[in-house]
Length: 149
Image 1 (spheres, rainbow, N blue to C red):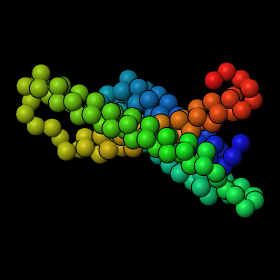
Image 2 (image 1 turned 180 degrees about the horizontal axis):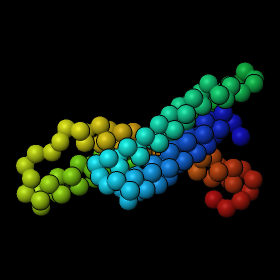
Image 3 (image 1 turned 180 degrees about the vertical axis):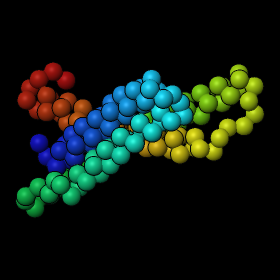
């Protein structure tokens, strides 16, 4: 397993753990005290920040070559996939909020939802990038080992 895969696994574990804990915390707080105070459960999303430390935790691979053309291509494809998913998530959020407010006959939205849009798009970008790296490396390894394409 190379450095990029280790960093991707760390990112997937951190964002996945943070998302699950946040969903559980928001649900429990909603049952106990209701909204809007239940949104405090989103503080567990801070755990995903540990995924960004992967560059420091996993040292560069020994040897003169750190990555080859295949690694660069996989990283580029993962970045494109991450961008596409992030853009789609942002669009769905914007249109969903617009639809909700339109059918509720409300003319304005709170500016406090804008950081949520930005954060959700960012989390989806990093998560998709990491998952795509892992998928592409696993496909590539199956082809090398003579498995199915």
